[in-house]
Amino acid sequence: MPTCKSITLMAILFLLTINLNAVAKQEQVKSLSSPDGKIKFTFYAGKNRKKQSLFFYSVSKEQQDVIKKSRMDLDLDNHYSEWALAIKNVPQGYWMHGLTLTDSQITSHDSTWKPVYGERALVRDNYAALKLSFVHQQNPAYTMEIRVRVYNEGVAFQYFFPDNPTGIYYRVMAENTEFALPPNTYAWHTPWAQALATRVPLKNWENESERPLTLELESGLYAALAEANVKDYVRTRFSLSIDKKNTVITKMHDPVNLITGTGTPWRVVMIADSAAQLLENNDLLLNLNEPSKIADTDWIKPGKIVRDMSLTNEGALAWIDFAAEHNLQYLLFDWKWYGPSFTFDSDAGKVAIDLDMEKIIKYGKEKGIGIWLYVNQQALLKQDEEIFPIYKKWGVVGVKYGFVQLGSHRWTAWLYDSIKRAADNKLMVNIHDEFRFSGEQRTWPNVVTVEGIRGNEEMPDANNNTTLPFTRGLAGMGDYTICYYDERIKTTHAHQLALAVVMYSPLQTLFWYDEAADYAGEKEIEFFAKVPTVWDDSKILAGDIGQFIVTARRSSSDWYLGAITNKDARKVTVDFSFLEANTNYIARIYYDDNTSSSKTKVSMRDVDVNNRSKIDIELKASGGVALWIRKK
Image 1 (spheres, one colour):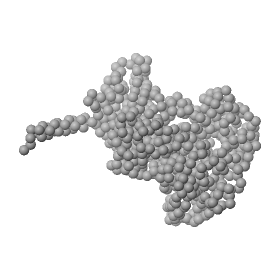
Image 2 (cartoon, one colour):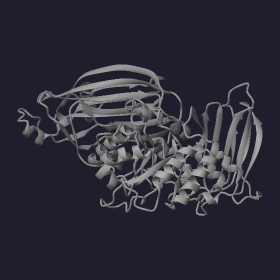
Image 3 (cartoon, one colour):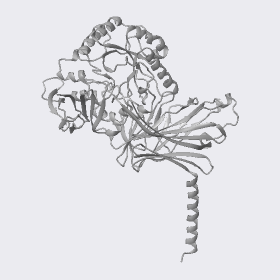
Image 4 (cartoon, one colour):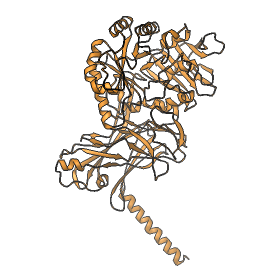
């Protein structure tokens, strides 16, 4: 027979259960699954004890937690706008606490689109969408939406502000979106865009991390936190929560003023079963951006580029001859051609050194080589409206933006205005230094590459190179600046050849620290001559972050393959099942060979392959292999 004490305890538990059920009933829950049914997004709208609204979400894949229940939150301060517009009955207190969920709508979308250039000829855009509508309790003119898309490749959501009849703008002070991750998750932390990425647990970070942020989950899943469509906003980075374990939070660069009819960038959670699949899924960021705003894109021509460091007529003409001989398309004049770069006193509309620009551009055209000019941000800010028409008149094909400021709302808005001005003058663009796209290359395809990558400017090692594709590579194209002859490279030469396939860049920089005179007839240079820079299809055949990667890309009927390893030697098996069935191919293999008589120690051999073939390849420490595969 139960005692009085046990009866009292049972009563307390009963009452507690009733209260918990009451709280659960008050919480509104909305769920949405990916088209293949594997990824699930769940939204929760509830109230705390003070009856203040709180919003959360979670993400899972096949019932495995990817993002545990996490806060969705914006910190708004609209009082200056409200004062200026004499708005009465303005919301008081913390803005989002006063919101009420009033409606939800589920739709779906499935289409394909053709990029101007890319890693594949067609991109599929297939998702389920959920629109959550909110009204502020204190003034129904204030509304907000949370827009959600669930793809087979991950989840994206944004905060959106519909038109407000008062004419107010919204000042976003902070975005406190959380990503609560499962225990024992590891992140590939990158403190700035050109820094080394390091595998660390979710604790004791010294700095915020750059995006995308690649994650390894204990379940075996891979994920990445990213953002997309950052054109009139600030850059977001990632930091650890101070008071919540295993939780990453968004950190805005500075506050943003949003007009109505706009929203925040998309917050993205990419999800995959392997690191290779995560990289193959990077079209997700493109799909979250608008289609091209450039109607006529015939003048946008990706290709391979070299630079003249001598800034002399003789050096430029030698490079043009070399480029024409080896199927390279462009020559860059790097900084100081118009004078000192870090000053507003230089005039980027005039050549300030002994360089016959007119003669060189004319000679380049005769040889089929276009000329690019480096311009630092000081000159761009001062005179891009003035100099871009001048460059168009000269016959220049592209501008390399140097040392671009980024992060703040001001510089982000300026940059995209400048990109548009370049497009108006039919100028291609390459943006350096810390800048990374978040899919906006779909909208402005005249930007044919960007930096924001630890490339051969800094002579990184092979560990860095085998990490970059799975971290920085998720953001798309990156100007790695491949070297070949410079003695400072920390990899083999076949590794550098393979980078032309592994590192995707529509404008692929080659021979970065080299001179045309360094070439001594090395036969393997034909690989640089043949390899394209844009693709009809791309596949990551195998790989592990920081260990190795095997990438295959197709242009027309030819395939090109690049495999690189870290500082450890290893054997990789190349499975050719990606080739067309019932077709015979010849694979020319460019490989490291210590017995070679050439100074680069690279040899070549041809082998017959088909889609049933498998070849074991020995990679030297910090080495690589490149393949050109063509039909017989």
